Image (tube, rainbow, N blue to C red; front, top):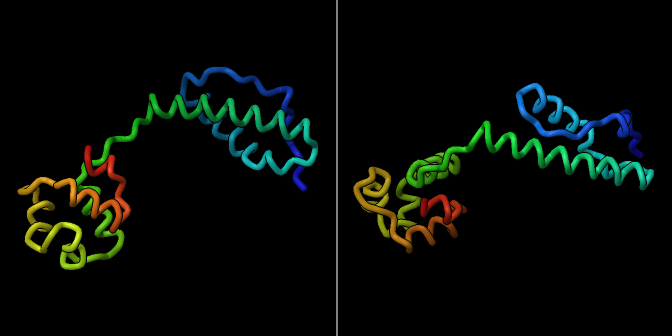
Length: 132
């Protein structure tokens, strides 16, 4: 199956404090991503433990240095409609009519809880995005 080309004993797990550390960690994650396919159980477990630890450190660095902006509910709706190639007429049922679609998308009418529920179930837009 899968053999390992990395010396696991030479890997030093330490905090990621700069972009160079992050890039090294990303390369290591890429190299260990298929560690679950390693035949030798002891080696597999060690590689998976290292992968887990490095992944946690890399995610922490990403959260601090590359924060994800919270999505605007109206922009999220517009993106989903565009992504699904739907017309306003086709999504009117989620808003309670064609007039309401236009009013909501033009920020003249707020989303109601019923609209949020309909958009969540009908278009798969997460409720936490719509309620932001």
